[in-house]
Image (cartoon, rainbow, N blue to C red):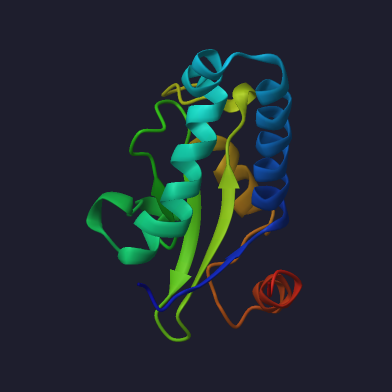
Length: 147
């Protein structure tokens, strides 16, 4: 069990809801075997396990760390193939804020302007995300998603 409060930015929240809606539609139209093997179903399952169980165990694991201008953020990629889940966290207060999960238009391809790292950098440079738990935007996310 972890001690982190888990919250998400609107971009992440909307992306997860879109994935859930797609999976619901797939469930209605595919056989059980086709459904459990579908890439979107596998992606959603992997993301849900990551954000609810794996990341909260230790959000500061070395393999999650980013460098350069993104060093204050983290990313999860295990089992996600060309997808990346970006987040920030604080130990005091203990909170993890999930920020961004790329879509099919921003698959991982080093050097591409549509690479998820490049897209995330654009969002950061626009001030869309903050890694600071006392930032007013972060406080708003905590309040808005206080389940």
